[in-house]
Length: 347
Image 1 (cartoon, rainbow, N blue to C red):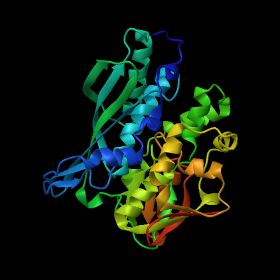
Image 2: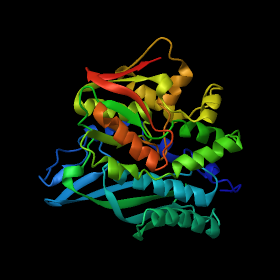
Image 3: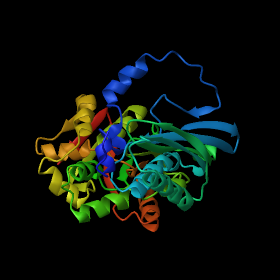
């Protein structure tokens, strides 16, 4: 295999757009045998939680997650940063404090220069240092496509765990980061991403979702998750299914990266966006005024996307204050939970 120096040229997909489509994943998991679920396992596979949670005593629970993917950018250091940020975010989405990480590394050893691989791991290490956690070990293999990510272990008080199945009727829905990372990544891979769009892509994908720790301690916050490969619509539907409620969001309120809007209007989007829509379109109701480019943003796979919060209206101000204090200036209320099922998108 020849290498032109662009990391993205070595991968058929990138970032969280590599995820198996939601419909296909459901079919795969249907064949899994019935499992014994110990009482101490507070969160697991039953509702697509962001991480597993295992209680070790009345005030402590271990949080464990893993995430890895193929390059979403060509800069190896930035790829390492993005992959590490994305993995750690699942721990924050459970309201936990990360403790340490294990690295997962798969590289085409005979194709990529050693220095490039070193920069990927250095990028991951830099984010772990930012999160004040060590990389304590890991595993590496020789692969056809480059893959990097982390296993992340955290700690949380069981009383502060925020699940993705506990939204309440009347709750406000708040999104912490703007959408559009998948669109930007598609433009980058085709060589059509403006510099301003690239800078925003790096900014948002390397912004750790640290507000999750504070948000978990707010009594009025009922449910919490993060938006990744299944897009805003997909992860919001997980909240809906878990609580047996309907989400109603207003498209003009949804924060979106400006450069992504310009690109998606030119029909730039990922194949994962199409697969996502095919997997859950039967649960989504779009008002007639919603255009195809807006649909593609709702299904756009987010790599290291924002936190998605379900909170009582009385807690809105406190939630927004946490986001603002942590530098999440795009956080916005986008809708509410109502009686019913599925997702309704209003214009």
